[in-house]
Image (cartoon, rainbow, N blue to C red; front, top):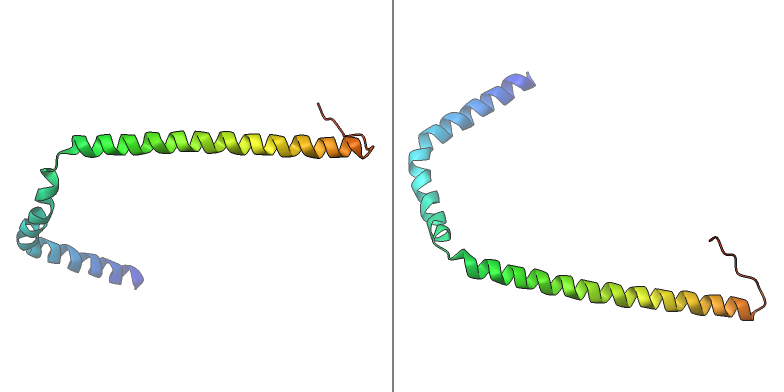
Length: 91
């Protein structure tokens, strides 16, 4: 029963699209036509600049984060050594 309903719905949609396409396609074309006349090179350059800037900022953040974590680990290790407890090295 469900399969028959699905088939009937697909058939109705297909016939509807067939009948309405001569009226809808010119409207859709008119909507998208201005997008095909856009000069893409400036947009591409802006996107590349933005991506490059983001990459550089990401590298700076990763370096800062890495240094911060290394400093915190070194300080924690120093505190453990000063407290008289031997740190466990797994190297």
